[in-house]
Image (cartoon, rainbow, N blue to C red):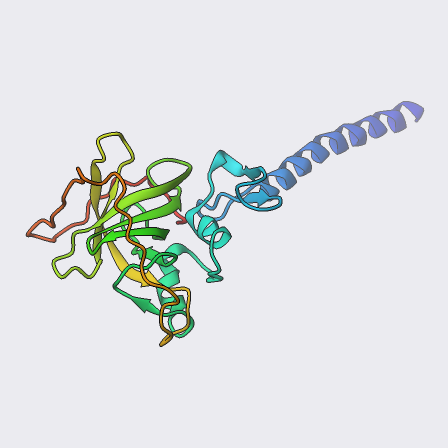
Length: 221
């Protein structure tokens, strides 16, 4: 009788010990899961002054734009253009401080957003963004308009190497401005021409059939 009771107690104890680790693993997995490629991050203090803790070491482009501007648009990058309607002015001409909104493509289905840091000429701008060709933050990256009508509906982004080569063609919606619809710009566009004497020119292929992708395969931009 005593032997049976001791045996039953041992079985229960072993069962409990096997269940607890499994529950702990399940709880840990749930806390560290990410929705459709979203890499969560935790920041402390002001951006650029203190450390930013990121899962996988990547700060998504949407989070970067929000941290460095007054835009409070929600959703993935591809949702910013329609979400800005009625709240922010939108257009086809670049302005410093505006957001260049990329359309979703095969390799970046949720789009991409970049902050315009400089306007060089009517076909060339500089942008700051995160999670493009590299897994980090890039500043003053050259972007060239290759659309037939100079409406910035198709662009090429510099690859970031010393040759200043441009990447594939990407479709864009246009620019989102940090003012209400109908309001005038607070200042003139700033023209930056530093070190661009040997700027590579770009042209749009005649076919306009398919937009190639050289950005990383990612889900949240």
